[in-house]
Length: 361
Ligand code: PHE
Image 1 (cartoon, protein in one colour):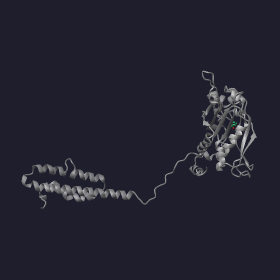
Image 2 (tube, helix red, strand yellow):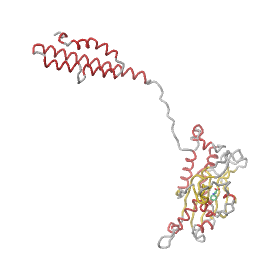
Image 3 (cartoon, rainbow, N blue to C red):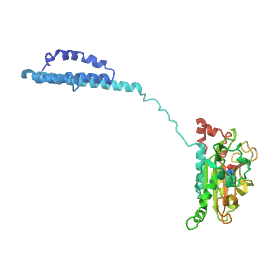
Image 4 (cartoon, helix red, strand yellow):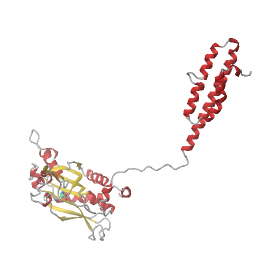
């Protein structure tokens, strides 16, 4: 049966003649959708016009017109979806090169100072220490008075310590030791039966890592802000043997099992006796190198038995309780472990430096 194209209204006949040319001229999805609307869309398209026409057509030509409409519908739909497929695959192949290696996205990591801090805390956690935190904006009382630091002590000078102009008794803490005072004061508080928190706990041991501030000029070994970790243990009959045992164990866990530790007398107002703790240089193993300035030893922390004044200032009976405390600089230990001679690198956040530090354990 041949198709009766003569039954088409002239406008549609003409449009159909151009149909193929229009389809091949379509450049994108929008062009295709526009053509779809004109030819086979639901509203006022050539197809809907033809369907309306079919209703009014006399019986004798209904079958012919119906066959023609079906043919046109098929033709238009097929051609449009074919062209759409062509366009989609062409645009995909021009913008995506499947042979290219994908870009390697940079991966973030914990900052080396933070990582070392976490490591130090984890070593002491195995010994039953928990973490206490204190504010970086401190009172003179917590930072100095409560630590038995004399009113005329040079560390209090405004040339060494950052004070707040509007609040002369507030300062940026110069060490993490004020956390000792805060915790001890809390422990001295008594319940309704008159029993102090310290008594009901039977003692305490904690670590307190954090930022500290001093008016130091920036140079390879100084920064106005750096990190310390404070440690404190309070109990009954605590002596230097407990301090030595604890710190010797911790330094070996931190720097390696073959680490040798040395205790020298040292002075800090808040401990008595006080000591400075050195480790055998982990880099040259005591032979003498640039890092240990040829001495074979590196001073790594300050420590001592808690001064009775510190206990009594906080309201704790210094005849019943005793303890030890220690403090270390995190950057200092990081510099030793990583053989990094310049402290500033830890704060500049040059990604090349941070990347190289990822290899250091
Ligand atoms: N706070 C001391 C400092 O900053 C370190 C220290 C802490 C010393 C505890 C003894 C006991 O240098």
